Each structure stands twice: as structure tokens, then as C-alpha cells.
Length: 94
Image (cartoon, rainbow, N blue to C red; front, side, top):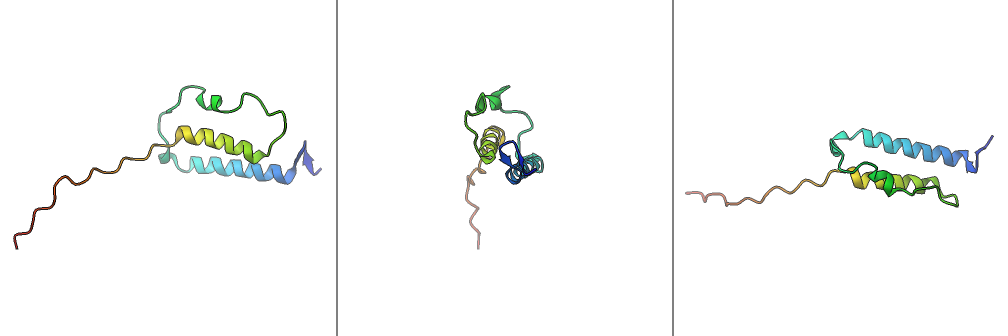
């Protein structure tokens, strides 16, 4: 059998591998993400469509949408730059 539903097996496999790679990258960098959630309950779910589209769409589009919804709500904010030096070094007495 060469197809699962309307999706060619090769396309399904490629999208599945991409999804697994995304999850593996996410799990391999725990220090890049906050320990506590910075979102309200169901906020990520609310960022996604309520129902499936009337017309089919590429699996990559669906993965992109989920990835963006999660990324925008879980990444740490950039660390602030260190404060500038407030005093200049003392002049040498030479």
C-alpha cells in the first residue's frame, strides 16, 4: 500500500520525522525554557484553530503552526545586557 488516506506515505514519513526532530530539539535544551509556565491554562490550545480546516493542507503547515504557538509562549526572554561600567579605571600613576 503506498498511501495512508490522502497523504502519500513518503510525505507522512517526512512530516513525522520533522515532528520528532522538533520534539527532540526541544527536549535536548531544557535550559532554554522556563521552569514554570508563562502561559495561562489552555493558552497554547487557544492559539491553534478550533477545528480542522475544510480543505486539506500540507502537514508542514500544521507543524509550523504548532511550533510557532509553542515557541512564542515558552522561550525565555533574552537576558538583559550587563550594566555598563559606572566608573573608569583609575589612571595609572606612572
